[in-house]
Length: 90
Image (cartoon, rainbow, N blue to C red; front, top):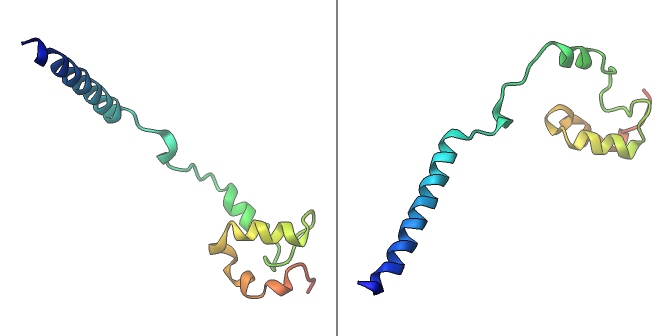
């Protein structure tokens, strides 16, 4: 009977660990899925944007602006097609 005692203890401890981990997983939800509060500030920002959004705004170098736009490809996709024009004044 002694030769089965250690494997049974290991299985019980492992089972309790898995059970604990599962219970924690059921109740713990990270807050990164919370809805974004939209109070209109983003729309104000978009409305205040310069007419040619591909043009480098004041306070940025051409390289900094190109890097910034690369983080928002959905908003600046047409700027990448004319990337040679970044920083020019129209």
